Image 1: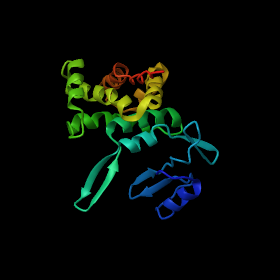
Image 2: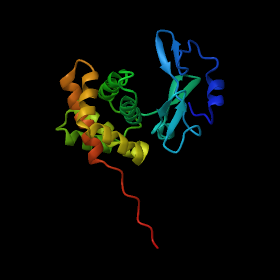
Image 3: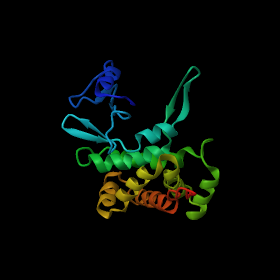
Image 4: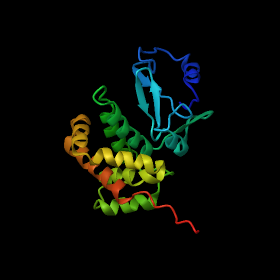
Length: 212
């Protein structure tokens, strides 16, 4: 939730049910939901002080800017971050929170497979997906993962792209992440490899040179 201060965060979340002892996890039905603050509350390193800890909120602002409208009912819609952004946030959350929590890894596995299962959306870059198919010998599964990595820089910018790639290029972190993603180890490894490949083959573009 984008807020300017801790006080504003407390006001926004005051009516939510089942607040846990950490102050940011809420129980809704059978689900536990983390409500993380970002925005003006961040420091210069894109972190939010919280009790004796800090949240890494790199990519949150950019994900909000890239959010797409989703209609939940005829008279109700909300903005949802695209899968490209959600995958990146899960990689960074894993790096920031493991081993305190292991849920980010299976969430990433689910997201990488979600595009494969859901097919192309109206908002997708079909030209980029065609290139992803070519790059993966027309494997729909691998092309979907490649596509999500390839769109990373364009969706949420240079700092987040750099941070995600740095995590996945560390063999020890990638091995740990893969081990927590679920039982479909071989399939997850292939998807993660193509996700990173897509990101590396589509780096942020250099800014245009300035004329002096």
